[in-house]
Image (cartoon, rainbow over all chains, first blue to last red; front, side, top):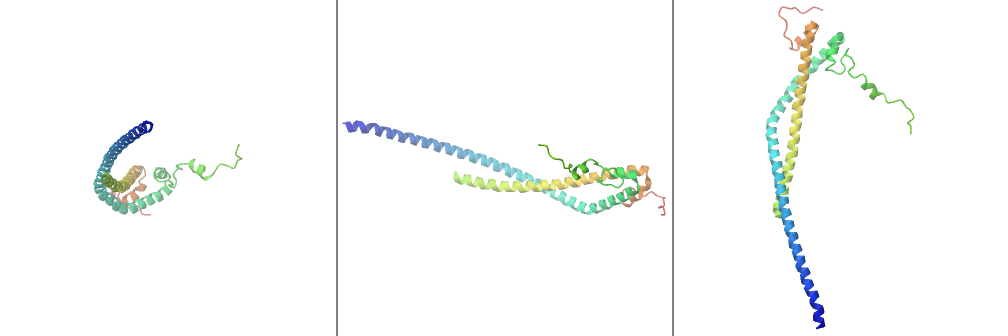
Length: 135
Length: 81
């Protein structure tokens, strides 16, 4: 009788613990499942966004590639002419100071042009004189 | 569910890589085109200033004419040096 009295409460508490654990486990499984579904939905959305953007970039590339090729070809033709023109203008500016001022807007060191940044160069070139740092 | 997740993650990686490389190429091409346009603008401004200067000092005309910027004046003879 006394053994029955002692063993019965522990058995009932064990079964209740077990059922409680099963409930916890089921709840966790439900949460895990819902989180997986949410992760799947988010991943599908991100993948869709990236696919869409990649497709748009692909369409933009189809337009840009011929333009870039044209620009490259035009640069190959124009650059030597432009450089020659600039060299001629710089030669011309050597004998014409007033044109040096005009050319100084475009070329950094046009002959005869006023110095574009008179204060910037010395500040970079010459560091501050060695003075003992104050502490 | 796991398989679906794995497939979506693989697709995500593929699309991300495609997006990265295509975006980079678009930016490179756009910057090249913009650089060319800036260069054209620079030359146009320079030519405009040269044309304006040539009104005050025609000595620059031979350079402009040699580069087909200014049409050669009809009936004028080149000055002998």
